[in-house]
Length: 503
Image (cartoon, rainbow, N blue to C red):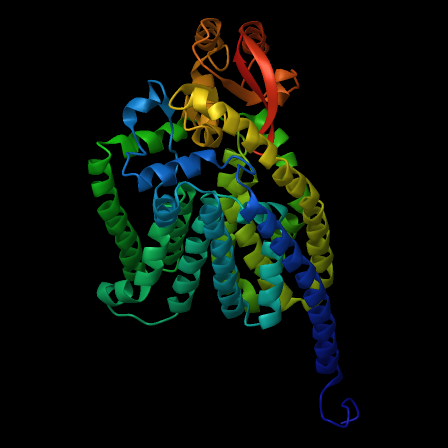
C-alpha cells in the first residue's frame, strides 16, 4: 500500500495519465494550427480560376465526360491533337454532375479532393483506433498523416489522389473491422468483406497504384492460412473490376486499355530517383519514424501480430514509391500510400511506447511550419490569375476553335481553343524513352518554323534555359523565338508561362 496514493492508483499509472494529458495538450495545439493552415489553403484554392498545379488533364477529362465525349481515344495516342488520359475514371465520374450543371470549373473537383481528405482522416482514425486500441495514439497517427506537406498540397487540387486515398482508407477500415470474425464458408466471407471489396475496386478505378491494397490483403490472408477469406476477397475484387472494365472497354472502343497501358511505358532512372527523393526530404523524418516503428513493434510481443499487416503494406508501397520516383516527372503524390502506412505504424508504436509521442509531435510541428510557408506563394499565385484571365479574354476571339500549342489545357479551355496536348508530361516521358533526342525536337521545329500554331504558351523555365528543362530543348525555344513574338507572361500550371504569337 506504501507504493500507492490515497486514491489507490499506482504511481506508474498516475505518471502515464499525466504523460497522456501533456501529449494531448501538445496534440491539440499542433492540430489547431494545422487545421487553420488547411482552411486557409482551401479558401484560396476554391477561388482560383486557373490551375494551381498540373490540374488540366483531370479537368479536361471530367468536363469532356460530362459532354458525353470519349476521354480514352486510342487514336489520339499517335495522332494530333495528342490526348493521354492515364487515370481510371471514378474521379471524373464524381466530378461529372458539377461540370454538367455549372460548365467546366475547377472548384468542384477541388472540393471533391477536400471532402475526400476529410473522409480519409475519418476512416484512418477508426482504423488506427481499432488497431492500436488507443484514441490518443490513433489521433497521433492521423496528425502524422495530415501534416505531410504534400498531403496538404494535394488536398486542395483537382487531382485524383485524395479520392483514391479516401477509398483506400475505407477499404482498409472495413477489412480490418471484419478481420477477426469466424466464418465457415466463402459466401460468408464475401458478405462480410463486400464493403471493403467495393472500396478497393473504386480505389483502383480512381488511381491504378491502389491495386496494391487488395493484392496485399490477399497475400496477408494467405500467410495467415485463411484461404476462404483470400479467395472471397481476391475473387470479389477481380469479378467487380472485370464487371466495370468490360463496359468501359466497349464504350471507348478499346481505348481505355490502350490509354492506361500507355502510361506504363515511363522510363526509370536511378539518377531521377536520387534527385526526386529530395522533393520529399522535409518528410523523411516521419517516414524514418515509421521504419523505426517496425523494428520496435516486431520486438514487442503484444503488438507484433497487429504490426504484420501494416508492415507488409509499408514494404510494398515503399517499393512502388521508389520505382515511380525514379521516372521523369513524378511528384510527392506517388508516396501517398507509403505515408499512410507509415502513419499506421506510427499510431501503433505510440500506443506501445507513449513517450515516443514527444519525438513525433515535433516532427509534425516541423512539417506544419513548412506547410505554413507555402500559404503565401499559393496566395500570390491565385492573386495573379485575374490578370491572366483578362489577357486570355482579349485573345479569345482570334483563337477560338484553333489548335494551339500549350502545356496547360486549361488555358486552351479558357480560350475556347483546342490544346495540342492533353497531359504533355506523359507524352514527353513515353516519347523520350524511344528517342535519342529527347522530346522529338525535329517534329516540333518543322511545325513551329511553318507557324502552324496561332499561339504558343510554354513555361518560362525552359524559355530562359534554366536547367533542368521541363519539356522544351534549347533548339525548340530558339525556333519559337525566331518565328514567334513574346507577348505576355501568364499563369499556367501554377507557374509563369510565356505567351507567343506568330511574327
